[in-house]
Image 1 (cartoon, rainbow, N blue to C red):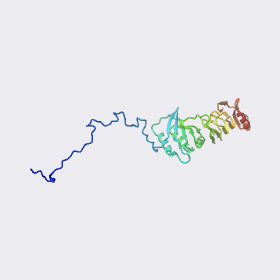
Image 2: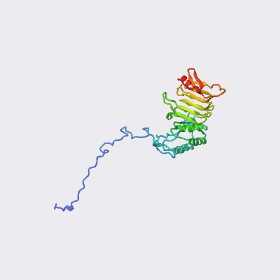
Image 3: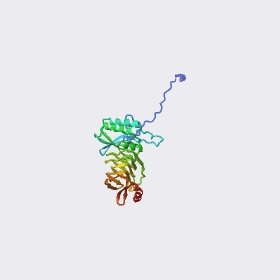
Image 4: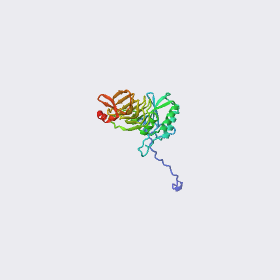
Length: 303
């Protein structure tokens, strides 16, 4: 038997290639996070809610106006304008965006307010003029809502609101909707208004208030500083509302329904035969009224 075969006649034998280890065949199960007590991360279980889709006309990273109910009234809270004069805070909404979002909510079918509900606008640091406030009041009125009070930290917005006849609270801590002032807090700059404070309107400010106009019966001015009315004072005036009894109330014609300085209260004095500019101050005997021409002496008594 000839064993010398030609090389070409020898067929190669296929060799077995080594297989990677199979943990299932070798009794080694792959690690299972569910069996080992390690649950996969779940944003809903970890308190991370998926972002809500923005309203029509909004931007995913922009704050949007909110409606909230509080003690029978409706709060309309605007997002802050932000910025420090060099530009707005990133993501700040323009008034056009905010206006579209407000109308979208007012025209929606999920209204939760009662007819004739009062609306308090928390404008924060957003600058609003009289036209914008009027447009807002008209839109609210079409939904049987009444804009009555504006909270703002901007002087221009406060002036526009007071001139339009709304109650105003300027210079407060808007983030917590709390008008209480911290003891020892510095007074805000004076608030100057050229308007008539009508019945049902209240002006609040964390500094001195100067009004060129009248304060009608039923109107009120509350200031942490002095109150100066270049006209007739026939409503309520409360100076030194944060507790400063050295504050003064001055007016061309003193006919108030009530005077308050700090924690002191006085009823309306009898109307004199002739009116002269007068000043109310706190003495050891309580609130007293003197002629404004005697202001220097009054200041000495008030110290």
